Image (tube, rainbow, N blue to C red; front, side, top):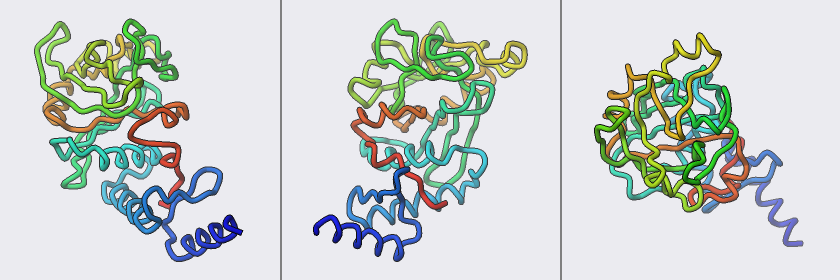
Length: 242
């Protein structure tokens, strides 16, 4: 009887709120209250359209990034960086968003760890010496001059997923192997030891735009991440009316 009541309530919710969101299995996901969930979904849809991201940025990756961004209260900047590893290294897959003014500031190719895969990143790790990229949410910290030039320290926010980023020296930096010309010759970008490496021509302006406490989200189509994440969960992997 209780299940029938819940199903009836959810069906009424969907009819009342056409932008309510659903999992791939078709079940609704009232993560807070149903009304709050619908409002949050509507706001992400509005943001996606106002930034004119259709056909440019993966909707699912964007929604997860914004959902997590809104939950991270100790951020200091209204800036969100999304790295979408569902795309190949030959395509632009790093995006920097100005969340206050609702616009995209930068888009760029970006390298992944050499043991994460070839043209696509498909394997991820938090372990020292793995030379793999790590998924999930980060806060950007300070900059420094290192062996890779001007670099940006990252603090992983998710235990067991990316919290060893500092220990592993996972930083944003420029690299000649991350230049699109490398991909045009070899079919993919060169790869890092796990860092999100950028073309040297754009690394400094992008680092300056995101340093000092902004949120970064590294996404891949990996269900196991959502099962372990302390910021998102499986109910955040949803299909929303756009």
